[in-house]
Image (cartoon, rainbow, N blue to C red; front, side):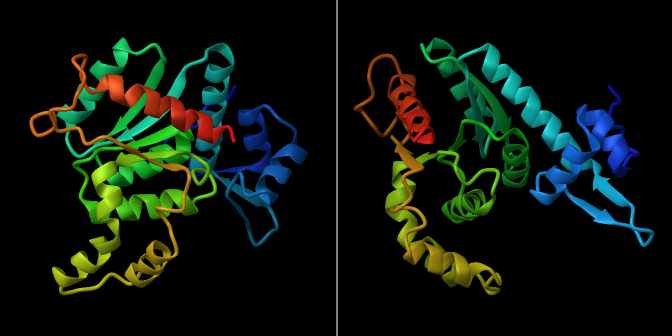
Length: 232
């Protein structure tokens, strides 16, 4: 199978069909469905964006992994690398088998989430609330991620009604998309979305209710709940 190289920004329909190992008609259908991004040259020849082909290949790999195992494929977006390591170590003790991709940047996390299309997305509690609102907004609107459960800190869910207003008070320049996000919050972007699931705050120093086994004992059933909602 031909591979995609960095210098290949776009490919012909025939090249794309060879890479995906499908017929020309299937590639054309994928373009019509929006599964591949393409445009036509002045001569009427279709060109496929290489990055959209790469996304399709990543989805295939994930589908194959799911067929051969019962593992949960999760995407974790964190503020600090040490927080991701903490969770990765915790899930090793779970009965639920989790393969977690990690991003330490919101933009990287969004791109990976679209590419991987995981079973669930975990947002670290240390991500600033306004940034979490933006992440939820884009994940909820993108066709590749809008049906994926999102796990967020319970404290964030309680805080969110005043998040955008608070950001406005501390910012000289209101972002052009703030009005739309504020309206979506008021219409129930978070509290009416069954795919947004709260998990207990992860600061063990201030919360004495943790079980002796640590926070993974609380998170595992929440991961299982999220997987159940994805199947509804």
